[in-house]
Image (tube, rainbow, N blue to C red):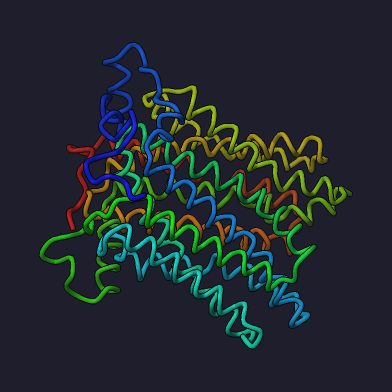
Length: 451
């Protein structure tokens, strides 16, 4: 049943998230500390689930994410079965990351140019159509890879649109931050569960049959979004919203987003630490081989950072107030990669696992950073800004994995991970200094260029 157009059913809505003005940057957090001796009680995740529209968005996100993970495994297996080529099989997986930059740059304008619900449903239906073509027995390998690229290029548009839509559903305050946190938690959990489910599914059905499951999840996601969310006008509505080519509009929006020094500093805080933290995951298999670890230990090492990220996010989201989350952003961002320095001693699995869990926990700074970012970007640019954020994050992680793998061809694996922690920490500290400088020098901390 569609949500009522009169407002959000249930006891909690966007307005309840606006009771406390949240800090929007380092300087704002400092001023808030000086003027308020006690922190208000955080809203909690239960308050987010009390918003009916969010429950539909959450369920759709979980379904589509599980489908994507299963399809990545199944398609990789299918390509390998058809070709026997490890290169093409690996390329199939890599193509899930590379087109993010293209989709996030050239099609970012879609997020603000068209109504949110229509955009989300259309993205799901396009992905379902691509997956259905993959299932056809006569689809050539080149076609499978091309369709994989199309699905990957659509993904940042969908994610950016959904992220911007959360401000309409949950408001711009604490509920939005907790809603984003929940989606990140379920993303980490679904990746762990999805790989396991995909492996079990492939044990009982052929690869093409597993890919069919992905099409079903996309269709279910589209149905949930269509029936469970309100129709809202395009975010960039107005005189210039419908004029000009889509790509030109997308590129112009991207320039506006990246052209503002404060917004750019926040984006780099989102992008740079994850680019370095992926090194131990990218090199988990060769590292496990180097220290004589078996498959079970390798599995634990692959899961450790996700476990740390989930636990830290749950703690910060439930135990800390909005002001406290804002206070920890810069210190945690600066120190989050330090645990990777433990790899310099080439630790065994028992000592490497705590370092990986701590490195994963370092991502908890993003909860407060979310609030700064949504406050810094104007409404008419929000969809494009969120799409650029997503595209840059995924592209950076893919680049980080590739560079780590390249470095490991010439340097011992444990040194590559340790150097990633060291160089990443230096970069993170530099970004923290820049964020403080930008916030302190800004006459109007929330201002950014208008579209």
